[in-house]
Length: 257
Image 1 (cartoon, rainbow, N blue to C red):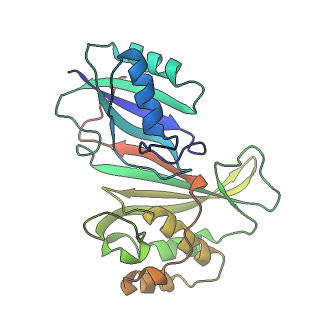
Image 2: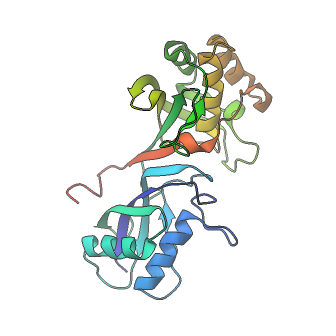
């Protein structure tokens, strides 16, 4: 069966997350339903990561197996037609080897988080950012974030329902910057690792927001990490500012697509 890699963009607000669920809409379910319109049968796709309810995708990657050989551009176009009106788009499609796997072949996941700092309610960015009514000190937040980079036991920043076998992960990068936009100042978080624990990025951002607001000293982030205790974590931020931005592979399956 020919295998195809799909680069997927989606707005997470209408969905209960990526993973297929029996009684709730999901991104996986929407794509599998579209596939069934093209080849009528049950379809199961695999993704590089499972995003939670309300989390968005800019560069999620999944793969599907088809019965017949499809031109990748034609497959992407047909899927996008059947995905309407769901806010899901196949932005690239490429045929890959039969043993290529969207999850297990991945070397790194990259997440992106947006905080909008303004008091007036946002209209155009509503549901796409975490909006707060105060300014943040990005330099202080970066000082706190530096405690998290490297190989650590991230129990403090792990959801109690996380199913990962180990809390030990290597965080490759956590870079914070302030960006002036048309709708107000934003703080952006760029986070990279081979894999993440459940709610890890949102736990990072919620904790570091406390540092930027002056409620925590940067050193307290390191103390929280060393505690290996979920109770030491700061607040977990809401999902709407979080994006699965990109997935890196030994060879980019979409190069030239």
